[in-house]
Length: 488
Image (cartoon, rainbow, N blue to C red; front, top):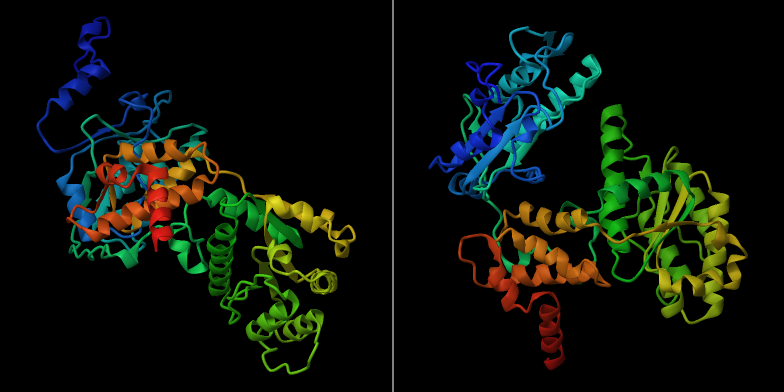
């Protein structure tokens, strides 16, 4: 770094980043935020990992107290380690209260955005603000307000960053919005009934707020549903096929549809109609599907005609709900083999499903979830006559390390839970990463780890390594539970 009184010909008057780093770390304070607005500012860091914790939807009182109590040593930089920081950005930029204004020449674009942020613009979580601006909120705001205009107006790459120093723990450097009366809600009670992890159970539609790690896959599946009439969601047992569809795809489609209806001012709630009840084939699939559609489809609930076809049911629904599309989900399609033992029942179900798809190809989408080890048996049933080969296969791939980290951290964050030490998260990931059935094993371990805390809460809201080892780690916790069930 080159101070104001540095001499160009004398490098001893420059400051090495390590010298500044060591001087700051010698400070005795609990919270420290260094803000560097200079070229190559991102070089000032001790690791290659950004200090970017998930931004909570709500800052509860307990989370705020933790921010204050724990050490927060963070560095906010205006540019990456290999980027120059702009001194001036010509053109219209966002100014006070979001009004576009001509850039003032005496401040850099980063500094202007910083001033705007600290006056309240960065108070974005929750949506209407709560009077608290964390370093993470500050970083997210600055990234959007600096990176995009720099590229658009100056054809220049400038990416702000947020980095931790060695003394950083669970704290956050915070600013209070001027004139805002602080009133933070209490965090959810950590009871056994409030477990944020599902254990060995799949996620349902109502669990969407705790379903993480599949953002990319949800978007990919949503795109396929919009384009393909018949989709088979395939994966090995335990890869999360049902959860992806029920807690990922369906809530995403419903939210987007409601948002679209609200923006257009239409009374119709959705362009997609999605039955609330998810069908499983069971022992007698065709009557099961008939009954479900009669219960769920608006306009056909009064049908009394026996043996009415699926096509006619959807005809009646479509006539009373013009402009809507129907998404039909059939979960655990392997039950057509494992539970439906009568070939004529299988045949009747498949033939009617095929006919209905052909008759309503414009408005009907069918999504099946199927264990991949049953695909060969399902595809060889005579009733398909080549249709199975034309189905679009959507493979549910194993999670990456980053996705597994989301699965661990995000539900805990929603309940204001912490991992002590933070390296416990890496231990959990490494334990299951190469293991078949990694996802249910991880979910079960976290479920049991939470139960251990909920039975003896100590006020720390921390899931600890000591409890993890006491439970027998991943395999041990499953073994203990199996033995307990067996003894019962």
